[in-house]
Length: 588
Image (tube, rainbow, N blue to C red):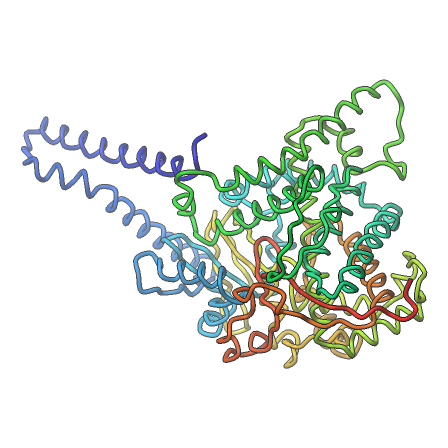
């Protein structure tokens, strides 16, 4: 298989060869005209033709962009000016901070200097960054057709996401969207049998581990819960990752060895996470990312493991559909899974696999990340947990299973989830690409709009927008669910709804939004019915995964953070979130 790096180098060789051939042809033409050129000039011309051509192209595009911006009454986004060729130092610094820092490190400093919208200009490629709600509204809604995922993003992510709904545009995106939309109906997402079964399993394992004297990695547990729930919901073939048991603290030796289906489940979960981490790191290296995968496509091995689990399920579903081809079947009954629904529309295994994996990422990782952070925030804000438990005891009771109507009526629970997703956005960073030249609204009444060249990457950060004090008030860094209930709601959010986008917006808004709210609400209710307090136990995780000591000198939340938030496609806790919980007196 040709690796991304070899393919990339091959394109460079072809381009270089074409330019070299052009130089040779020009020299021969000069000779025919009687112009004699010494060999050293020919050699110099051939070797310098590529960098000169590259430089002329950059100069030409800059002139064109300035003129087009002027014609449109706009201004160029302020560029970052690094100290090395092609802003290489800027790219390497941002990559290092993404890997080893706090989300947004590096970008926050640039925003303070250049404003909320600027041009990273990495390796001479326009990459516009914004954390401005009016810009994000333009990209996601008002000019939706002009801002797409784009060929570059699709190529970068295709080895994992394929042509699924999160990695497609145009007719392919519409096709995927039309396939999944009918399945996420009110009646279907209001059914909680799957949640309850896996929640009971997860909580039972937590109680057993606490009673044996050990803390629990809540992130690991909730990731298993959401994975099992999602795989059963999507294709009635649960991966049973909870059956692998819970991990022990890093300094506790165990002799347990996983075998059979349990090992398959564990391998699938790990490979799925590894593949997402790899593709999330690629865009941070700009268009030269293939050079970091010269000898192999890093996603090949994890995706082999993922596909070995998914493919037999797809074959079974396709065979089942074909065997019932002549039978009338109600595809909307309660026992129908999303996969059953999808095979009624296509039996292409590649399309089915791509869509299932895209929905699985959305249905598992964002929910697991939000619930993990919610536990962290409840542990550090016990007054919020006490108030939330009081609402649960009043509305649901100490042991009853919550209903859809009860969840809808629990305003403080919804406020806790919204505030969790505001402070720690499930998808902190996202990207689009412009189709045609356009403009983004001026950031204030004195400025001109910002010019966006055609085919330009635009990264936007909901994470940074959610924490802006000019949008959310002076306490924007603080976790306070009441901001979604008191006068601050009407002061800040109601007039500008695009300052809060945990589920995206516009035509690509998350179809599973209500499903996610239901699953997260259900699990929080069950947890707080069973446990009355939460305490962090960071000593259970490897020391190198704890927040670095120098964070204490930083500003804002970073200086007070007691866990290390990191980002691949979604947010997660580096090293896990190790906790102990006290069992409630009236719990089962």
